[in-house]
Image (cartoon, rainbow, N blue to C red):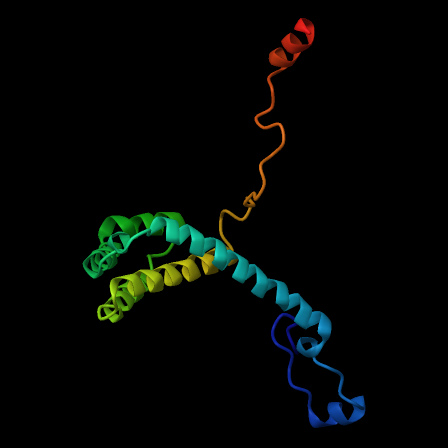
Amino acid sequence: MRIPFFSPAPPSSTESSEAGPSSPTPASTPAASAATAPVINRFEHMLADETSIQEAQYPTYDEVPGCMRLLDEFLMCYALVPQLRSFYRRGEMSDCTWKFQDFKYCMSLKSSDPEEKRQLWIKRRAEWWAQRRLNRSSEDVWDLRTERLENFPPLAPEDVSSDTTTA
């Protein structure tokens, strides 16, 4: 018995000989490849947005966090209060491996010159935030506006009536 939401079982030799010529797999059809293309474009668009945000956040090398600060953040992640908060909110203990990965990345940049280190850090953080924005979140109900709303905030009813009576 095959469960439908698991990957399909490979066809047996008797099924493939009876089926005749093989049909294209869903991944090789143009519709399936077109469905994956917007995700890449969406990631690139978010990456460009996040890069500009991160460049504004880290305008000079001095704003880039040092390795000791990243090590402190990693160790504080395993402290009692953050772990209890995570358990209360998500029902599981925090996974602090990404903070350790940041620390290791910082250590790998020690021999880089300051401006190169800043650019590499901005790229890493922008990729992280872009990937985070692509994944599901509790904030998925909100869409980021790119244009300002017309007539916002709306005029109060008493402002509208006073404007019409004086004119």
